[in-house]
Length: 121
Image 1 (tube, rainbow, N blue to C red):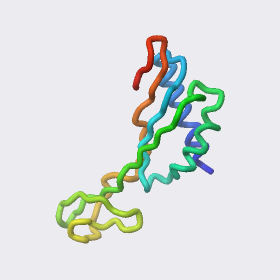
Image 2: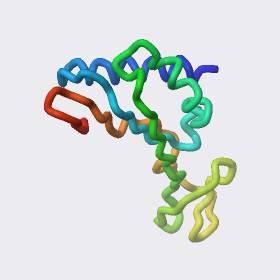
Image 3: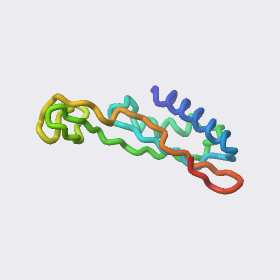
Image 4: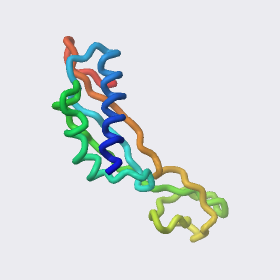
């Protein structure tokens, strides 16, 4: 399950952010994950507590926002949502499309608990 190693890398990055901002702990971590990212959100959610155990993020929650799969049509210029197995233009049906979003995994925000209170980074 490569989601555990992805979570471990994520926690390393989150801990660096927390230490840079002088945080006492991490409240939440928000990710945006696309259907073509190669990451299974449910497995990521299950691996997170194991990866965060014993870290500043041990009590944090992982929030996953699912990114839509969008293509840009080279035929008609429309930008439409698509299915992972069917990357065609939703407007004209052309298969001459370019992926706009849906293959990403992005750290959107980290909510930190500091001496001053809760901060979003």
